[in-house]
Image (cartoon, rainbow, N blue to C red):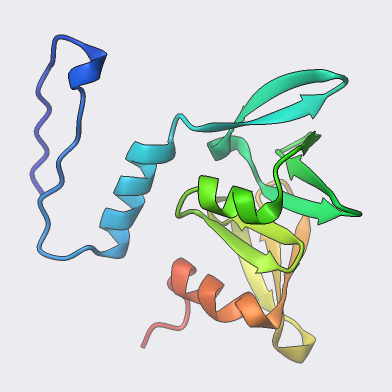
Length: 147
């Protein structure tokens, strides 16, 4: 693949053009990186509003009508609902249960569990359960079970 970078005189003129035979998984990943690499979402921490880069998010969970954003070592609350975050977050995020979204780039390994569920170990050592209704989508995004 050829990559060409042209310098421009202002940020308003910055753009990316991808010429591809087909929109493959790799192309979708590149698009997601270009669109969302600098993206962030607001969270509340000790009364202050912080911006968390989406690339730093491990998973997001809804508990008792509150939404929590988990990074490697921290947990923050956000005012967004899960369905709103699904729209804001990029291709690397996937709903893994009714109350949780996971960043697939933060998954170290997956293991089959009972009742057709999966257990996912994240890079920080935490384990999440992937509900059986979402297993097929996760396997597709991870490229597991290709024939």
